Image (cartoon, one colour):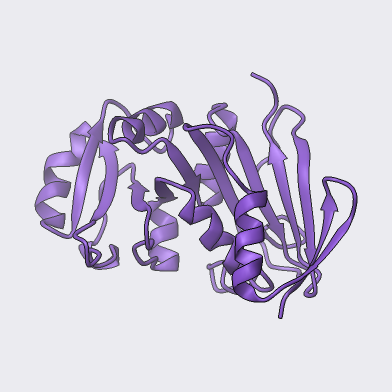
Length: 236
């Protein structure tokens, strides 16, 4: 049974609940503050790396990290990842949210996209107009292509606007570090949910130093010594 210490907001609280009760507690604690909200959710090693030696985040996850991931996904309209993260992690379709993949070159192998869900949902692939026709031909029925004017990977505002045009206003980005960093730098992120694992990793990708002071609005600690920080974006 997970044991979680709520360190912020004060006062400190210890939560010793079964998994379903803890899920409900996290649902309340991580509630969204608006109908349009962009979150970044990442796990990092002590040195800030977002992947372990195998190139995935699997070696860093543990404790309640996966449970928190499910909570954040359930409150989102769409889970957003970069094409490189999809290749490395081989994600499945989220249970309730849409899945969006940002690609610059449009060179996605259809095999890395998850199978459509039982209710017919397919991955949404956001790409520049110039590569959209070839990408549609390559993906067939495996994914749906959403073309934008410009590069969605390097122009995050375009990416968020494109998702909003599909009715997807509550976004949780799960990486990689480059895409997450670009979203933060562009000022389109409202909240950063950062899990810190008590592990040292190699020289993998990490979030770059970014301007502006963020506000710590929540901090949890579990029995694996992982810390779960909830950071609010600077005023903009």
